[in-house]
Amino acid sequence: MKRVVVTGLGTINPLGNDVNSFWNNAIHSKSSAGLITRFDASKFRTQIACEVHGFEPKKYLEHNEIKRSDLFTQYAIYSASEAMIDSGLEVDKMDPFDIGVIWGVGQGGMETFETEVENYVKGDYNPRFNPFFVPKLIVNMASGMISMKYGLQGINYTTVSACASSNTAIMDAYNYIRLGKAKVFITGGSEAPITAASIGGFSAMKAMSARNDNPAAASRPFDRDRDGFVMGEGAGAIVLEEYEHAVKRGAKIYAELAGASMTADAYHMTSPHPEGVGAARSMLSTLQEANITMEQLDYLNLHATSTPVGDIAELNAVNKVFKGSKNLVVSSTKSMTGHLLGAAGVIEAILSIKSINNNIVPPTINVENLDPNIPEGIHIIVNEAIEKTVNVSMSNAFGFGGHNSTVLFKRI
Image (tube, rainbow, N blue to C red):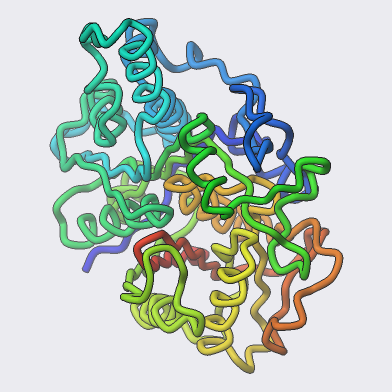
């Protein structure tokens, strides 16, 4: 099997409109949550979210690309462009069939769907839909438009596994390179779910925090008084490359992607298995594939979204796999970014990679009283980042439907 390395990073998310800003805000314990400004959320139970601010799509997108794409696709192209530039890839000197795009999306063009249906109803059901309605809506358009922008003719598709989607995309790209099916992939995920229908739907489930009077403190994984997640938005992109190809062209290498696994809970539509059986197997399989022992793992970025059930279920899984480890530290950076659904996995993978590059572990903020149900012996980094040698990091992403996914990076 061929080795796979990371040679480019890009992001646009509530905590930063580029990788450096994102990293700096994460290690300085910044919250990105606030009252929703995209629409009038005053009638909803949840009125807060982690929004992207200062987004300038024209930095990387042409006028027609903006006009013909939903926000989730604009975020995708933006982050992919940053990652491509960061990688130093010279696409015109490569066989375009050696470069693919695999992208993760959970919901797709929710804003487009809402707008078109509202216009249809307001127009007394006159069926005059925008001719770009379907192309803007469908989830695979992000991967398609990235490939069109850069002339990438290799494997191209979108993974949909709810909030595990971008981790699934990374895993697929990793395996295709290992098998020799491509030399380079642009992979990651994007989401633009801060819309009335999306917020309304999750709010009706009571899955999101209703701490509307103090948004900055609303996302609080592992805290005794957590009451749900805070919605986020944005995208993240990673350039994965076959190791020998990267070395030959003198590429900057951030880390090696050494393992990736996925399992299913086969338990419940929206709740994780309370004992974390599937999540534990996903982490264990990833360690085994990477030939990494329990004691060699330095940092684990948890999926933990700040829900009463989910956080403990994941820590139960961690306890199954890592009980007795004296080296491992864990944190949930969703406390700062909110939950980006299909894009959550990739932005947390980026932080996991940056932790290796900088020997710093970002924290879980807003922890005032640790949940007494947390298994003993798990070292959670709370409220402030710590300096720690990080040679190996891992990141979890789980999704409705019982999807569990894990990716592992190591210093090279």
